Image (cartoon, rainbow, N blue to C red; front, side):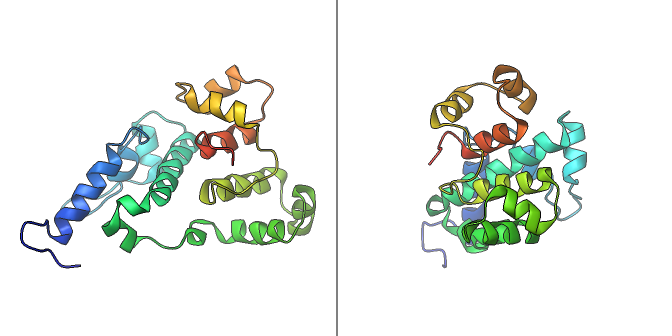
Length: 186
């Protein structure tokens, strides 16, 4: 894709796409992405350093940045240059998450996957949050109702704890699933 007369060059187009994505209403903390960049005399920070500086819990920062990336994947048709740089959706899953996903797709229940994988319940929950965040249409165990997801999505929450206070009947696992669903339970 070469720049034509009157068209921005590839670098400019990439910059414009990044700027548009990071300024969208869905990205609440663009620093979670931009402050990791390195180049020239600039050394990027780790995700832990950024979370600390922004006074966020590490897990809140992690899920916020993961949510933003998954939104980017969902809207790739609007970002043609960035699309060229992106891996396939499956690449977003951790190796362990991929193993859990394969078992689940082969019909194993949450409990069966946990038993077969010999992992803690919280680890399998992390995998299903990963799966839901990556494959938005995937039905996963423990997903709250569409109505609950919509209420959470419409709320002005800044932490998982705030959501937990508002929805005490939900587990943190269910809250994380609702958050990564982004208002879409299907």
